[in-house]
Structures are given as structure tokens and as C-alpha cells.
Length: 601
Image 1: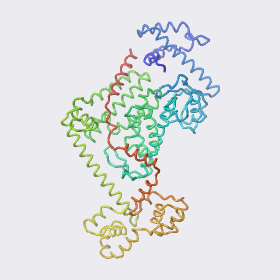
Image 2: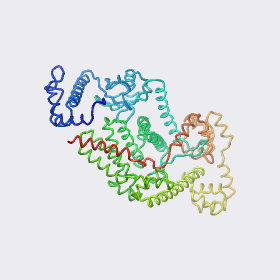
Image 3: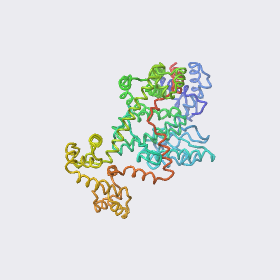
Image 4: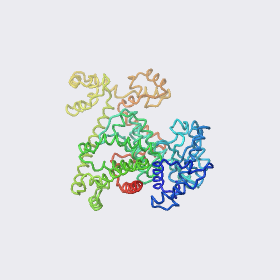
């Protein structure tokens, strides 16, 4: 919308016209030739007195509404007669040129690439400079427009990554490369646990920081989604809303590949929906109201399920409701703004007041905040502690130390859990297919002083029956030693033979382990499956896990290693998404409360 038009005044006029059932596009306000009549001037004079505003401003806005209605009527006729749909456009961060169209007309059975090309040709932009988003999804170039939910008279967000000039074009390409690199880094992070800089195997945790054990396929998809989300949040903190939205929508697409059961275990998807809706607001793109409504409903349902209607469950679980309240401030603010644009001003005021009440309840005093920083605490620690302790600096100090102790305990427990998981993978499986019990193994080695290799072999053959394993150690130690030595290392000759057929050494060794050194079965399986072995075969490699992961990352290109390292640095387990200062939120609350109250006058 042009800057000369007031959204508040347009909303007021729409409401009044709807109440009075006035249709500006027909007689007596529009003549048979489609021109305005004197009746429109009379109506403007009436509303000028009612709103106490200049008559010139009123007629300008009424004529805008009248012309827009006539335009829609004509477009509806074209759609009925020619199946030519009108797609309205909203630009971000701003309309790129004076010639940028406010709408395009296209048949809905055309692929997304045609729509993009049509816009690029009109604005003389390259395809890399334009991203089209509808209902929170990037428009797919290959699929038809209709299959992606786009309908006649719907609005699409057109993100312009540059306008004209070499510098802007270079900046656009740089941004798209960041998105591609982030995705590649996330994919690599999901598939490896080591590279030249050391371990950074990402664990999926619940709201208390405890690891959630997931199938490898689910873990990979969720890791990619979480990593892209965190990258998007990093950009969002810099208030680069258009760029942040690209990352967030990429994360959204990955989250939607995960099962509903998995998404119910973590609150990240609910927070992502809130972040995307926040981007819509900051980009002034709330025309996509339905997507915002759906996303905010997803966030609200999860938050209430996790924290309770009045955060009572959160009080029980974590002992405070300080920092999570910030999420509800943003939620109710966005819901209030959606209600405002739906002309539900009373509902908007109620939600905005609710957001304001929550915000005031956790408002941090500047002096107390500065005092906490002076004690050596970080911004995140200081703000979250003061909110949790209602501004009591002494209590907040104790809170930080207690939180640090809890995090250290959780990290210690998770480290031990990870160590046992890695050891279990190295030890292999029992005769019945179950993993060797690490606790029993360490009891035999550390408490009873038995040999490591013999202990694992005894537990393996006795299916974790420790009494039988100890008896076997005493009665058949030589046989165990022979079996352990045979199992411990697959013959290099056999691996070389499988390699010579054309398979990589890791897959070769995994197949030989699985088929108990049977060369023919190993080669036959690898040939049938194009050299690809199941993930659990790789996990079962004895004493070879570290070599396997190192080999995997050592073979990466320099560009892939850079993408992986960059993403690894971004990934964090800290609750940074809860550290919201609320400054912007309070500004929006004040702005939309004033607008909603004005619209009700």
C-alpha cells in the first residue's frame, strides 16, 4: 500500500461501510461508466464529521476502496470466463521499483516457475533475486500453482533479494549461498559425529536437557530442522527479517518431514511457528492471515500442553515461569494483531492487554540487570534469573548458580550416557541379538578384574548372564581368548578382497562383520545393494567407529568442511530462544492498542 494511505483509516471505513451495507462499486456511488458520483463526496463529508478528519483524506481513501472493488469485479469476470486467476503481491522488504506490479494474472495449472519468470521479466530481475512465498511455503518451481494451494485473489509474498546493480546482485547471491551452505552443513551435521575439529555429535533433548533416543532417520531429519531453525534465529536477532524468513521456512519444510509423535516431544516446532509469524509482523506481511492464524494456534496448543493454561505445569516442572512467559507475550501480541486485521477490535484489545500484563510481570529493572552483569553473569543468565526471581538480585544470583549446577549435572549424565552408548556399539551384540550390557561388562572388568576382551566375549556368548559368563571365564578362558581374537579383527586380506571388487573399505568391513567373515555372502550383498549397507551394520563395527567417522569427514571437500564447521558453531543447547528483551514487543503492543481503540471510537 502506498504511504499516503492510512491502514487505520481504511480499516475504520471498511467497518463503517460493512455495518451500513454500503457497496461503493454500484449505484449511487458509481455510475454506469465506472466513475465516482457526487454521492461519494456526500459520504466523505459525513464520515469527515464523524471521524473529525479532513474531508480530502476521507475521499482519497473511499476512492481507493471503490477502485479496488471495481478492479476485483473485473478480475473475477476474467477468472470465470478465461480461468485467468489474479494473484496479488506483497513485497519484502519493500516494493523494488515503481513498475513492480501489485498483481499478476496467470492460469493456476501453470508451474511455479512460470509465475516467477513472469514477475522477473516485468521487474527485469534474475530468478535468483526473487523468492515467492505462499502460506508460509516457498513456491515450488516444478509443481503447479494450484497444487500449492494458491487460488484466485490470494496474496503471495514476493521477497526481493536485490534490486539493481552489481553490488545488490552479488549480495543476493551471497545470501542464497548462505542458505544453501546452511542446509548442506545441517545435512552433514546430521550424518556425522566427528571431523578434524573434534566431536560435535548433536543430541536431541527434551525441555529439561535430557537426551531423547530416536531412530536414526528421525534424528537426521530433526537435526537438519533444528540446525536451520537456529541459523534463522541468529539472523533474526540481527533484525534481518527477510533473510531470517528464508532459513525459517527451510526449517519448517524439514520439520514437516518428521512424525507428529516426534514433534510433540520438543517445543522447537511451536517456537518456529512463532518466529515465522514474528517475521510476518516485522515485514508488515500480515496479509497472509490464515497462515499466521494456523501457526499461532500450533504454538498456543503446544505451549498450553507443556506449561498449562496459566503456566501452572511449568511451575511444577521447572519451579518458575519467568522466562517462558516471554513466549506467551509474543504469542498473545501476534494473536491480537491478527484479530485487529480481522476487524475484531474488542478481541484484539483483550489479547494485547493480556500480552501487556504478561510483559509487565517479567519486566527487568535496568539497574538490577546492570548489577547482575557487574557480578559477572551473561546477559542471558541475568535476564532469565531476574525474571524467574521477580527482580530479587540475591535470589537471582542463587538461581544462576543453581542453574549452572543443574546444567553441569545434566551434561555429566549425558556425557556418561554417550560414553556407554559408544562403548555398547563397540562391544557388539550377544548371540540373541541384544547389545552387551555395559554395566555388567564394566563390573566384570573393574570389580572382578577380568580381561576386557574375554569379558565382552563371555557376556556375548552367555547373552548377558553374568554368572554364566564368570563360570565360562574360569572354565574356558583359552577358548574365549581364541574366539575374542578372531572376533576382534577381521582379516585385512578379506577386506582387501572385497575392496578389489570395487567397494569401499568401511562397507566391506561392515558386511564381513555381519556375515561372520563369509566372503561370498558379503560380496553378493554389496553387489545387490550397490555397495550400501544398513546403518546398524556400521554401528556394529568393532573398534572401528572412530576410523569410520574420520574417514567420512576426511573425504569431504573444503567447501563441505567449511559448511559443517560453520553450522556446528551455530548449534547450541542453550535456551537462547527464551532470552527476549521484549522492547520491540512493548512497542507493538502500544501501537496496536492505540489503533484498535481508535478503530472502536
